[in-house]
Length: 388
Ligand SMILES: *Cc1c(COP(=O)(O)O)cnc(C)c1O
Image 1 (cartoon, protein in one colour):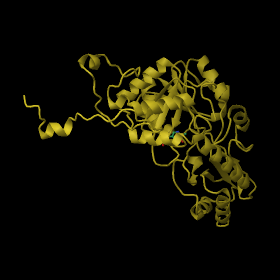
Image 2 (image 1 turned 180 degrees about the vertical axis):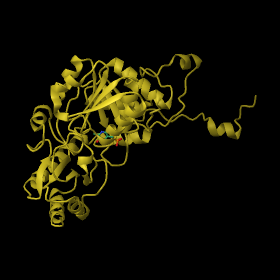
Image 3 (image 1 turned 60 degrees about the vertical axis):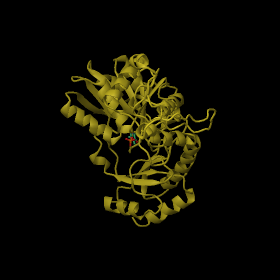
Image 4 (image 1 turned 90 degrees about the vertical axis):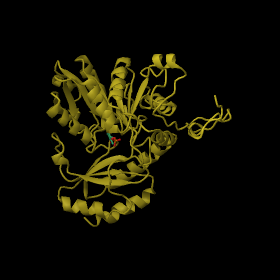
């Protein structure tokens, strides 16, 4: 046999091995669909679900395993599953845990696409879905039926920012045998401890603060329950929810500065919220650290900090056209969805058409306070308020 490799072979099989002993802080970015096995026996016996082996890119690489381990550690959880977006993580929960004939409860103020998926599941998949008042607390027990499999919760709620009593909701749900999934994105897994408050599964949109760059979509599910982990990871594989290693790298990189960034977002957001609260144009500041916000006392009891996202209600004398003009007049606050990055954002929402239990008055505008100079942001708000 000719030992000299012909070109096509040479291009694909090299004898070169890089020098060993390289060490650096960044996690290596492993790109792989195919993962190589040492021999057939290893291929036949390797299982992916307990993470004891690498089997296929979809099921994990050293890069994804590293981020999963870090996210789990931060939330004091045992298992973590990554998904291509926060919404994909919601999908894994719903399709992994629900069956035809089941019932699911979702808070009225939940992240909008979660609500939309609930309506879709109710319409097309033979599952009943009911929306509950987020401030229901232990009263959730009265809504739980024999077939109620899942109770979604979110703290605080998207847009209207009510802080629910997660302890009471989890206790009542567990007494009736339902699983509680908590969307813990606002606190980024560092300001609220999902498992100490009884959640079975914690969900993070890593898209937001963990990434911090407004440049990547990713979600995570964290749990301490081996059986739930098994069911969720099975659904993750079946649904093909693999994540790309470059995106994972961006989140790993962002997370190194998560604490420092969160502290800065928190200080700036509270300063700006306090400034807005003193303005005659604003009737309510819906920031969990402010007494205007429903559930403020629960926030004080349960949270160790706040993030940079909050909403305000304008005095009802202002019309939508006027508050739209305010938003359009802002210079540093950009108009766009998502949040958690270093740039400030501002979005008006037609909240009355979105929530069933909402009783507030006036136009709702949501702010994400970025890492710009706080005085510049306040000056920007001040000039835009004159355009009302
Ligand atoms: C953004 C967000 C999600 C979804 O995350 P994506 O990565 O954008 O899909 C889920 N829940 C909450 C509370 C969010 O703010």
